[in-house]
Image 1: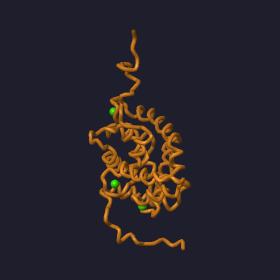
Image 2 (image 1 turned 60 degrees about the vertical axis):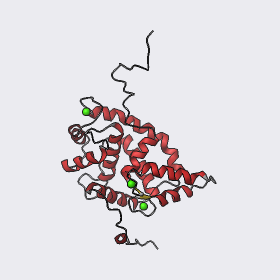
Image 3 (image 1 turned 180 degrees about the horizontal axis):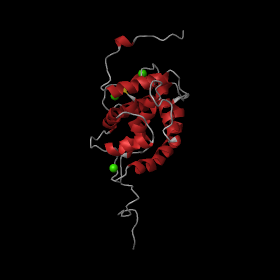
Image 4 (image 1 turned 45 degrees about the vertical axis):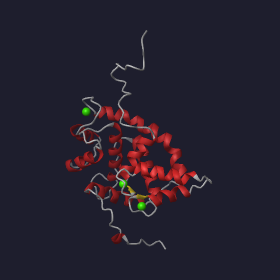
Length: 237
Ligand SMILES: [Ca+2]
Ligand SMILES: [Ca+2]
Ligand SMILES: [Ca+2]
């Protein structure tokens, strides 16, 4: 066959809530036309430790751009970050991204939110129409990791509509059959963890936030090591 079915007209049930989200879906669909190198759900799972390791390295980048050191990146710091990384986004785009990723609504990016934001930037930059298409962000390690995350999403999104449905999740896991009956239930659980707004679809942002949780990156700043006044880690006689 090889033809592309144009049946988008009938599936307008869940419209993207924002312009940014529409752009993300568009960028994802563009990327999906290139296919995924993932062969199975297991191959995604197997990459978790490496993804975790690389995202943690990003902590230094986060701290670098948190210039006032308050543990969060505010809109001003984010703009500086984009300048420094030569990410040619408009102020409006930066603000939209900030709002989309500032899930606690406290006008500050926590570490996990920052990672999600950068990964969205990575996807959005891959736009042939954009001025800085395909140019590097100056974060080679991270970009490889982001590519893996995008690749994983592409693998899951079987019908290439830029969103992962519950059925697609089940399908992805069933393809991996190792004869385990529990995999379906795990898939459900994973899906529910991802689908924050419970609209039955997981978008790339939801996927990324879920991912940062799975690999254990929360917005906890309890493990800061730059203050030196930890009260529980070291006790001196
Ligand atoms: Ca700050
Ligand atoms: Ca889909
Ligand atoms: Ca959702």
